[in-house]
Amino acid sequence: MPENHTVAVIPGDGIGPEIIAEGRKVLDAAAHRYGFGIEWVEHDIGAERFLATKQLLTDDDLDSLSEVAAIYFGAIGDERVPPGILETGILLRLRFALDLYVNLRPVRLLPGVVTPLAGKRPEDIDFVVVRENTEDFYVGIGGRFRETDRRTLTVERELYELTFSVDAESDADEIAYQIGVISREGPERVIRYAFDLARRRRKKVTSVDKANVLTEVYGLWREVFTGVARGYPQVTSEFNFVDAVTMWFVKNPEWFDVVVTPNMFGDIITDLGAMIQGGLGLAPGGNINPDGTSMFEPIHGSAPKYRGLDVANPLATIWAGSMLLDHLGEHEAAEGVLTAIGKSVTAGVTTRDMGGAAGTRQVGDWIAKELAKR
Image (cartoon, rainbow, N blue to C red; front, side, top):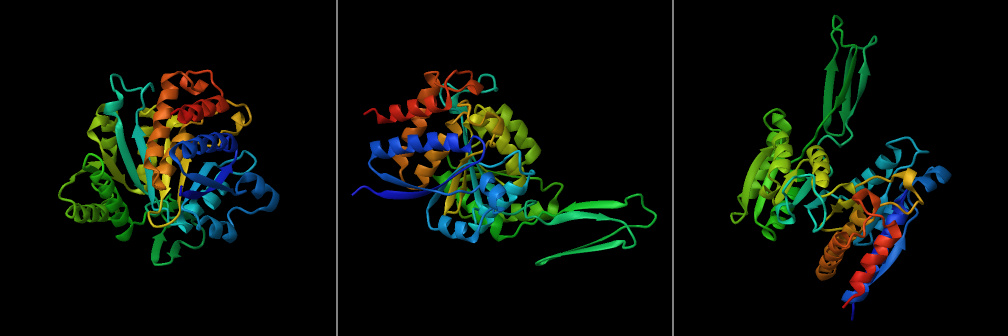
């Protein structure tokens, strides 16, 4: 009998509901063609609920979401809510609560897509960035201290303790601090994921860090990378500093296969990757827990000014849906969706951000119909 997959849906804010609607349309078409089913379970999580109830992400939400293999996520962010509240209270809490420790970002130039890199073709731009998703400078340990009568600040956060002293003769009357934390377990599991992925691709892993300056934090990262690499003798490995990687992404993207990086650097270099593959409208992402629930989303924002105008580009969301299908084991369907996206671009059925004239719904309809062809 055909397998039936239960997928949680969080449409979110702004253009989120519109692009998720097109993603669901395409994935339903893929399910019908390739012989499986999808049961969609929609969750009301986002700005509207927060404004009405002050609830961001409840324990009941997390219990329900943890029961499915995959979440299809639209976008978060609303001009009526101060920046950071929704992102921290929903997205970051999901990452930590569900232990989504791998952020997976394909950087692949599809046929027909224009890249700003002169002379580069689809065969030149096809790599994956594996970003550690729960540690580094995003662990939330930080703050500010202004010199008053107390000239010493002690910060205690679980196992971490840090003391600052302000010299009475100093002009530094205020200090801001942000602490990056890397455990041995954090990089080990994400680096191992990267090597396993490389074995299924072109068997090369590039590690990104800044160990020449931030020697303690990224020195540990390098130690762990070196140790894991010994267990994969069939995979070539190398180190790259993050500033060098930004140059080589532009000059020689064909050099890379799987890139593994700590959290903060991954956040930065994947936006560069998005641009060389055609822009944010074509950039999907996965937040992966290989042993639990995983979440798939476009990496762009909620763009509230375009809400309801039928102009938002749904391709990143549809591509994220392809990643979701691949995660569920529907590999043929996942590749079929990606092929159909490429055909839509080649046929000129694109939204205005890619130089086309099609609306959001028209792009989704075209790709769904393409998948229905036998």
